[in-house]
Image (cartoon, rainbow, N blue to C red; front, top):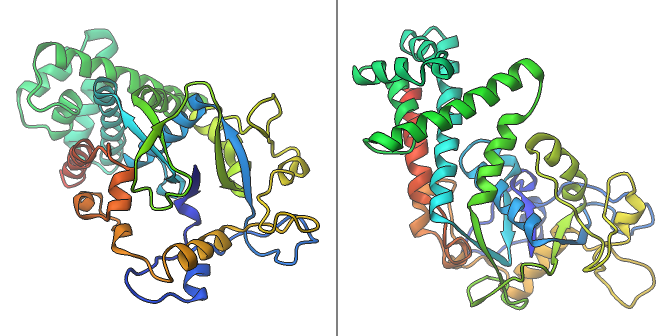
Length: 351
């Protein structure tokens, strides 16, 4: 399994045209080795590490959180060699909480800008803990306040009875967490959203090691055996920040068994897990991110990106993406994400 954050990707590669070294290098030019003895110091070295299956699910959950615009797109992890599926019920619940968080954020922004309907919606929300949602439901019955409608309906269309009760419960949890974060400097809301995302992740499966395009069959991963992952040095160092912001502790182990964990407090230990570009030679020749991409495009793809990798920044066009993108992301929740962004887009354009 490999992973690289979108924030490290500095350029795009056109499909179906010859590519130069500069084209490849410009995609992943960042970083420098802390090892001054390296003949090629430029570029982040790739690190071999191992994750417990439960932590792999956390990585997938964080990807889901970024897909729903609840974290910076720079943190979106582009995964290779791995496919995960979503649980239907838990995914539905996740999008309920994600929608609540997004709706409250936009409503707060609109209220701060002077929107009367947004201020009225926040006023009705403020009594949710004491009136059980009576004020919100009364305003909802008038059908004239888009912010109230979004708060009550969340990710449901024309909800009734128990759905509305569940929506108000989720809305109350999200609002309480957000309020605690504002007053106490905590990250309770992020942790709440991530916990729902983790619960939504179902099965994990791996593509064959020689299936670089991830187009073939997958094998379900064991619930106990650690998964080997290739990441850059920067990603290993950022895991502490992930725990601080999202409350998701992910332990990058040094080996398939044993308790030793890679830590930013011990760079020398991390460097012991560098992937060697020239095994068998004296010392370690670091395999850089850009070197790995160059090798694959040159030897695996013949110097040009094929249509299997076609994609755009518009998720709504997912159905027309290349097979390598769609196969790897077979459970991509296009409909749920579209509904969430549609709801938020409607509020952004409201008065």
